[in-house]
Length: 112
Length: 117
Image (tube, rainbow over all chains, first blue to last red; front, side, top):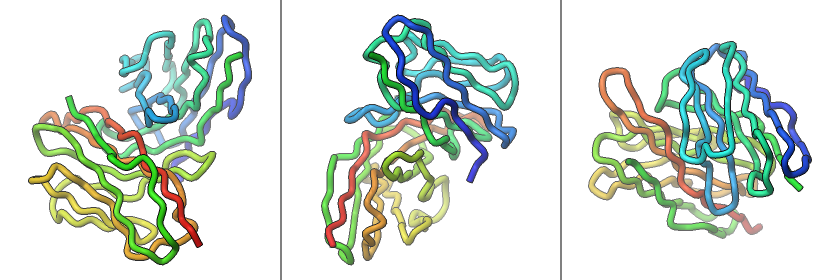
């Protein structure tokens, strides 16, 4: 299994509070991705990174920001959490964009 | 832009029966195609992938998939399903842009597989 960890694995927070999710990899892969998974929607890309300090938006980026200051870490921040951001968040990595992505175990976020 | 359709939201089969999960993609050029499986509470695991060459690809756990360009399909099959195959299955497509550049993966909505004993 690819060395990908996500923290926290579970979080409950209140509407309006900031939340940061962390993805850590030990594979030295260039590309990192944040997805959210919701019933009936499959996986939707939030943001991705193609290198340190290089990030771009995905299809559902509103309300989210990301940062990547080191190859191994990719942070996802919800600036002011809303109930619509209740979801399961997955991090993924790949050596090259468009090729095989390896997924972390996920973070289950509940916004009350 | 590419897209992926998995027409079946939920499929139920008996243990030992054959299985086929459908995946249709929309993309103008040669796609990269993937099947992932997700067990409850887990992340996604790669089952198999197609990049080029033989259109019938073998994956882990006895799964195979066939790329049919004329039908824009990449259906997943297994000749005899085991109870442990119960999970959600996702098809994904990646776009080849040119040179060494590739586009992002687009995932289908998933198919939930239930296996009856």
